Length: 212
Image 1 (spheres, one colour):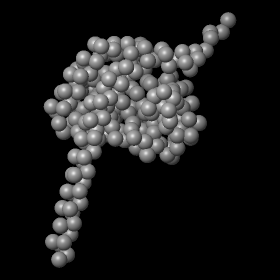
Image 2 (tube, one colour):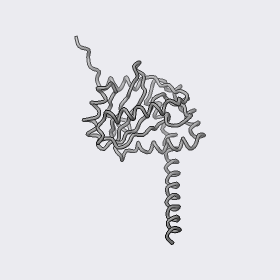
Image 3 (tube, rainbow, N blue to C red):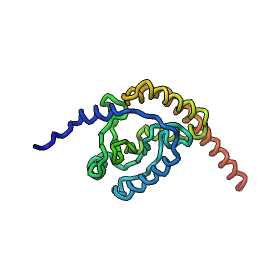
Image 4 (spheres, rainbow, N blue to C red):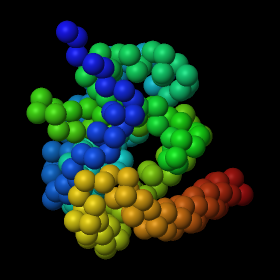
């Protein structure tokens, strides 16, 4: 008798109940990103992939994190991603979800994959989005934490507290971090806008000196 296939609802319920654990920073995390990036480039259609970035807490040196490497992949078409990329990665054992960016089944949706080790533990989360998605702001959050170790330390302490409060509720854990992440992201946006304006002004001044 064949084994009953897991429904999408059962799959989602199983995934969100998986235990949350925050670990001390592991210097191997950047290398795990590099290896996975090379693997994705080797097996996925090159015309669909625009860029691949390491983001999230494992991308911030010294920051405690869930030991899962977050990868942001820019794709030219999410429709083609569903048709062409999802079957390739599912055949390799990745979990695939057509996931809402905001929760509660609200658009925009994107392709999300979980990679696991032989023991079934998560090792990578892969988020595939198009160029206009708000997910790219998370690179600003990453860069700001790298430049401000005190803020990164505050974030790490917050995650440890929330891990204790929501050890098996990933949705609640993520929502509880939301205010901190949004606040720091807005600060980062202002900071980097100012830097870009200053760089533009400096470049213009340099051109005037060269061509008075």
